[in-house]
Image (cartoon, rainbow, N blue to C red):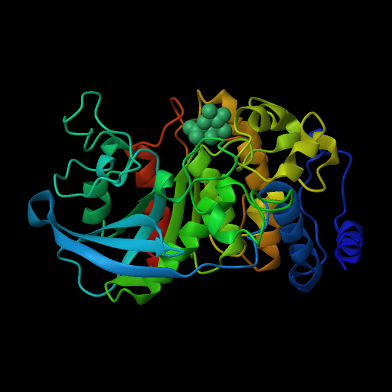
Length: 396
Ligand code: GTR
């Protein structure tokens, strides 16, 4: 069946040798062809060969609210929800909502790098046992250290909520043969590590974002039809994969996601498939190793991942000094995914020229910018995401 789908899709993808680096604009004859034949084959490729499938046996996931309070001098409501996976793995969901908001609140959902307590200088946020602590024993473990990356005040003032979980609560970010984190909850009897086509860490992180979405659907304060899933860098790869698999995410934002995210692998510019598999052997499925120094064998490049998100709005962002993430490769992937948006009557990127720094492009469903500066997510990036969300969610 898989071979048949692949064959049909290959026939439908009109590859043009005129394009550089073997990565091509996605040309599919009709929306129907895309939905019925090509999209399932593209999805299967990313599942089997890149991020890995989620194993079929699913553990139970429970939620309960553990704390509610105020932050930012009463301007913001805080809620903490404990998510328990397979009866034992605990992850805390931190939710900030504008206190004055009437009705259900649209939110940005993203994973954080160093613990929920780092996204704002809020003394009440529970510190995960898995999160890095302060340098000296007993000191405050860097509350608010990542506040510039989350801009909670700016987002809540703009009418959005912020929802986050800590990556280390789901799967600590190092290669331990998948003994810690959530993977063991999914092993079949006698299994001790994922099979070659089963998920790595990015797959597990993405799965957990969908579980957070399960909770958001039940929370009466949240406008679950307007949830933008977002991530920076490795967590941007995660947001893209979560958004590709789960259409409940109404918008997807990739900030400097680079190799294995929005950047085209076949360009081999900056971080390569070989480098990422060598340095982070736990991120992707084992099958992905086939493509180390062998990118030409990828059946489809990362424009396919972005196209899986169509017709939902997607925003891809790069930074000018972030050569490792290949800004041009990220721009081209967004451009090459755009024909799939057009099949749905949505406008994608139209100009084939990389825009100048700090000049966002895309007045349709595909947005892109190249921020001046280094690998990071800044208030300026967020200001563009707010504008994009305002336009798509509320026509503002
Ligand atoms: C780098 C890695 C990138 C990117 C980045 C990050 O070391 O090479 O793929 O994910 O980390 O997450 O900040």
